[in-house]
Image 1 (tube, rainbow, N blue to C red):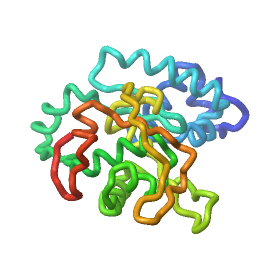
Image 2: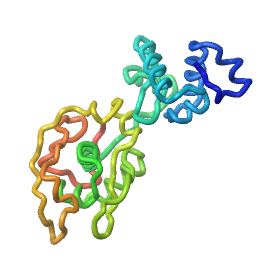
Image 3: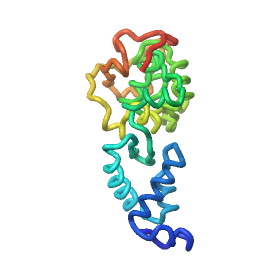
Length: 226
Protein backbone atom coordinates (compact mmCIF):
# COMPACT_ATOMS: atom_id res chain seq x y z
CA UNK A 1 0.00 0.00 0.00
CA UNK A 2 1.15 3.61 -0.53
CA UNK A 3 3.25 5.17 2.23
CA UNK A 4 3.56 8.69 3.60
CA UNK A 5 5.44 9.94 0.51
CA UNK A 6 2.17 10.49 -1.33
CA UNK A 7 0.58 13.90 -1.48
CA UNK A 8 -3.02 14.36 -0.23
CA UNK A 9 -4.16 14.34 -3.86
CA UNK A 10 -2.59 10.98 -4.70
CA UNK A 11 -3.64 9.47 -1.38
CA UNK A 12 -7.25 9.98 -2.43
CA UNK A 13 -6.65 8.22 -5.76
CA UNK A 14 -4.50 5.30 -4.57
CA UNK A 15 -6.91 3.85 -2.07
CA UNK A 16 -6.27 0.15 -2.86
CA UNK A 17 -3.74 -2.21 -4.39
CA UNK A 18 -5.85 -2.27 -7.56
CA UNK A 19 -5.66 1.51 -7.74
CA UNK A 20 -1.88 1.36 -7.39
CA UNK A 21 -1.68 -1.17 -10.23
CA UNK A 22 -3.85 1.05 -12.43
CA UNK A 23 -1.63 4.04 -11.65
CA UNK A 24 1.51 2.09 -12.59
CA UNK A 25 -0.15 0.90 -15.79
CA UNK A 26 -1.17 4.46 -16.68
CA UNK A 27 2.36 5.78 -16.10
CA UNK A 28 4.01 3.08 -18.21
CA UNK A 29 1.44 3.43 -21.00
CA UNK A 30 1.86 7.21 -21.14
CA UNK A 31 5.66 7.00 -21.02
CA UNK A 32 6.15 4.63 -23.95
CA UNK A 33 9.71 3.98 -22.80
CA UNK A 34 11.33 2.18 -19.82
CA UNK A 35 10.65 3.88 -16.47
CA UNK A 36 13.01 3.44 -13.53
CA UNK A 37 11.74 1.59 -10.48
CA UNK A 38 13.27 4.39 -8.43
CA UNK A 39 11.01 6.97 -10.08
CA UNK A 40 7.90 4.78 -9.78
CA UNK A 41 8.70 4.13 -6.13
CA UNK A 42 8.99 7.85 -5.51
CA UNK A 43 5.74 8.67 -7.30
CA UNK A 44 3.63 5.76 -6.07
CA UNK A 45 4.99 5.74 -2.54
CA UNK A 46 6.04 2.10 -2.29
CA UNK A 47 9.43 0.69 -1.41
CA UNK A 48 11.30 -0.56 -4.48
CA UNK A 49 11.09 -4.13 -3.18
CA UNK A 50 7.30 -3.96 -2.79
CA UNK A 51 7.02 -2.17 -6.13
CA UNK A 52 8.99 -4.85 -7.98
CA UNK A 53 6.88 -7.59 -6.40
CA UNK A 54 3.69 -5.81 -7.43
CA UNK A 55 4.90 -5.23 -11.00
CA UNK A 56 5.97 -8.87 -11.26
CA UNK A 57 2.44 -9.86 -10.25
CA UNK A 58 1.00 -7.43 -12.80
CA UNK A 59 3.18 -8.89 -15.57
CA UNK A 60 1.49 -12.25 -15.15
CA UNK A 61 -1.82 -10.69 -16.10
CA UNK A 62 -0.55 -9.62 -19.53
CA UNK A 63 0.47 -13.08 -20.72
CA UNK A 64 -2.71 -13.63 -22.75
CA UNK A 65 -2.95 -10.09 -24.13
CA UNK A 66 -1.49 -8.15 -27.06
CA UNK A 67 0.80 -6.14 -24.80
CA UNK A 68 3.31 -7.22 -22.20
CA UNK A 69 4.91 -5.74 -19.11
CA UNK A 70 8.66 -6.26 -19.32
CA UNK A 71 10.94 -6.02 -16.29
CA UNK A 72 14.62 -5.09 -16.59
CA UNK A 73 17.26 -4.72 -13.87
CA UNK A 74 16.51 -1.02 -13.22
CA UNK A 75 13.42 -0.29 -15.31
CA UNK A 76 10.13 -1.70 -16.58
CA UNK A 77 8.07 -1.00 -19.69
CA UNK A 78 4.75 -1.74 -21.38
CA UNK A 79 5.30 -2.93 -24.95
CA UNK A 80 3.44 -4.72 -27.70
CA UNK A 81 4.21 -8.38 -28.30
CA UNK A 82 6.57 -9.18 -31.15
CA UNK A 83 4.15 -11.59 -32.81
CA UNK A 84 1.83 -8.68 -33.64
CA UNK A 85 4.58 -6.49 -35.13
CA UNK A 86 3.56 -7.11 -38.80
CA UNK A 87 -0.03 -6.00 -38.07
CA UNK A 88 1.16 -2.93 -36.18
CA UNK A 89 3.52 -1.91 -38.99
CA UNK A 90 0.80 -2.33 -41.63
CA UNK A 91 -1.87 -0.51 -39.62
CA UNK A 92 0.41 2.41 -38.72
CA UNK A 93 2.36 2.56 -41.97
CA UNK A 94 5.67 1.83 -40.29
CA UNK A 95 8.50 0.73 -42.57
CA UNK A 96 10.52 -2.23 -41.40
CA UNK A 97 13.96 -1.23 -40.11
CA UNK A 98 16.56 -2.45 -37.68
CA UNK A 99 19.22 -3.55 -40.16
CA UNK A 100 22.61 -4.27 -38.64
CA UNK A 101 25.75 -5.04 -40.60
CA UNK A 102 27.39 -8.40 -40.01
CA UNK A 103 30.26 -6.62 -38.31
CA UNK A 104 27.87 -4.84 -35.93
CA UNK A 105 26.25 -8.17 -35.06
CA UNK A 106 29.66 -9.65 -34.28
CA UNK A 107 30.69 -6.71 -32.10
CA UNK A 108 27.35 -6.83 -30.29
CA UNK A 109 27.88 -10.53 -29.56
CA UNK A 110 31.39 -9.93 -28.21
CA UNK A 111 30.16 -7.15 -25.94
CA UNK A 112 27.04 -9.02 -24.78
CA UNK A 113 28.88 -12.16 -23.69
CA UNK A 114 32.05 -10.58 -22.28
CA UNK A 115 31.10 -7.13 -20.97
CA UNK A 116 32.58 -4.89 -19.95
CA UNK A 117 35.17 -4.90 -22.73
CA UNK A 118 37.39 -2.36 -24.46
CA UNK A 119 37.42 -1.69 -28.18
CA UNK A 120 40.97 -3.08 -28.39
CA UNK A 121 39.71 -6.36 -27.01
CA UNK A 122 36.91 -6.43 -29.58
CA UNK A 123 39.44 -5.70 -32.36
CA UNK A 124 41.69 -8.58 -31.32
CA UNK A 125 38.80 -11.04 -31.07
CA UNK A 126 37.46 -10.12 -34.53
CA UNK A 127 40.86 -9.61 -36.15
CA UNK A 128 39.79 -6.33 -37.76
CA UNK A 129 39.26 -2.73 -36.71
CA UNK A 130 35.83 -2.37 -35.09
CA UNK A 131 35.65 1.39 -34.59
CA UNK A 132 32.87 1.92 -37.16
CA UNK A 133 30.72 -0.90 -35.78
CA UNK A 134 31.23 0.27 -32.18
CA UNK A 135 30.22 3.82 -33.12
CA UNK A 136 27.15 2.53 -34.98
CA UNK A 137 26.02 0.46 -31.98
CA UNK A 138 26.56 3.43 -29.68
CA UNK A 139 24.44 5.62 -31.98
CA UNK A 140 21.68 2.99 -32.02
CA UNK A 141 21.74 2.80 -28.22
CA UNK A 142 22.48 -0.94 -28.16
CA UNK A 143 25.77 -0.51 -26.27
CA UNK A 144 27.08 2.23 -23.99
CA UNK A 145 30.21 3.31 -22.16
CA UNK A 146 30.12 1.86 -18.66
CA UNK A 147 33.46 3.05 -17.29
CA UNK A 148 37.18 2.95 -17.93
CA UNK A 149 39.70 0.16 -17.52
CA UNK A 150 42.25 0.75 -14.76
CA UNK A 151 45.21 0.45 -17.13
CA UNK A 152 47.58 2.79 -19.01
CA UNK A 153 45.54 5.14 -21.16
CA UNK A 154 42.37 4.21 -19.24
CA UNK A 155 40.52 2.84 -22.31
CA UNK A 156 36.74 3.01 -22.36
CA UNK A 157 34.75 -0.06 -21.32
CA UNK A 158 31.54 -0.96 -23.15
CA UNK A 159 28.44 -2.91 -22.14
CA UNK A 160 24.96 -3.53 -23.50
CA UNK A 161 21.93 -1.37 -22.67
CA UNK A 162 18.31 -1.95 -21.67
CA UNK A 163 17.43 -1.20 -25.29
CA UNK A 164 19.54 -4.19 -26.32
CA UNK A 165 17.45 -6.37 -24.00
CA UNK A 166 14.21 -4.98 -25.45
CA UNK A 167 15.31 -5.42 -29.06
CA UNK A 168 16.25 -9.05 -28.51
CA UNK A 169 13.29 -9.83 -26.25
CA UNK A 170 15.36 -10.50 -23.13
CA UNK A 171 14.59 -9.62 -19.53
CA UNK A 172 18.23 -9.87 -18.43
CA UNK A 173 21.63 -10.98 -19.72
CA UNK A 174 21.01 -14.30 -18.00
CA UNK A 175 18.47 -15.01 -20.77
CA UNK A 176 21.13 -14.92 -23.51
CA UNK A 177 21.28 -18.20 -25.48
CA UNK A 178 23.99 -20.67 -24.55
CA UNK A 179 27.09 -20.35 -26.70
CA UNK A 180 30.05 -22.33 -27.83
CA UNK A 181 33.28 -21.24 -26.16
CA UNK A 182 35.98 -20.07 -28.52
CA UNK A 183 39.50 -19.96 -27.15
CA UNK A 184 41.05 -16.50 -27.49
CA UNK A 185 44.73 -16.11 -26.68
CA UNK A 186 45.66 -13.01 -24.72
CA UNK A 187 48.62 -11.88 -26.76
CA UNK A 188 50.00 -8.96 -28.73
CA UNK A 189 48.44 -8.03 -32.06
CA UNK A 190 50.43 -5.60 -34.20
CA UNK A 191 52.38 -4.60 -31.10
CA UNK A 192 49.28 -3.75 -29.04
CA UNK A 193 48.72 -5.74 -25.83
CA UNK A 194 45.12 -6.61 -25.06
CA UNK A 195 44.17 -4.82 -21.85
CA UNK A 196 42.04 -7.71 -20.65
CA UNK A 197 44.91 -10.23 -20.86
CA UNK A 198 43.40 -12.24 -18.05
CA UNK A 199 40.41 -13.08 -20.23
CA UNK A 200 41.66 -16.24 -21.92
CA UNK A 201 38.36 -17.28 -23.40
CA UNK A 202 35.49 -15.59 -25.19
CA UNK A 203 31.96 -16.86 -25.74
CA UNK A 204 30.43 -15.82 -29.06
CA UNK A 205 26.81 -16.49 -29.91
CA UNK A 206 26.48 -19.18 -32.53
CA UNK A 207 22.84 -18.36 -33.33
CA UNK A 208 22.49 -17.14 -36.90
CA UNK A 209 20.18 -14.28 -36.02
CA UNK A 210 22.77 -12.73 -33.70
CA UNK A 211 26.06 -13.51 -35.43
CA UNK A 212 26.87 -15.16 -38.71
CA UNK A 213 30.10 -17.07 -39.36
CA UNK A 214 32.09 -16.07 -36.28
CA UNK A 215 35.22 -17.66 -37.70
CA UNK A 216 35.18 -15.34 -40.74
CA UNK A 217 34.50 -11.78 -39.51
CA UNK A 218 32.72 -9.64 -42.05
CA UNK A 219 34.11 -6.32 -43.14
CA UNK A 220 32.47 -3.23 -41.67
CA UNK A 221 29.53 -1.97 -43.71
CA UNK A 222 28.27 -5.36 -44.97
CA UNK A 223 24.53 -5.36 -44.43
CA UNK A 224 22.48 -8.02 -42.68
CA UNK A 225 18.95 -8.00 -41.31
CA UNK A 226 18.12 -9.02 -37.74
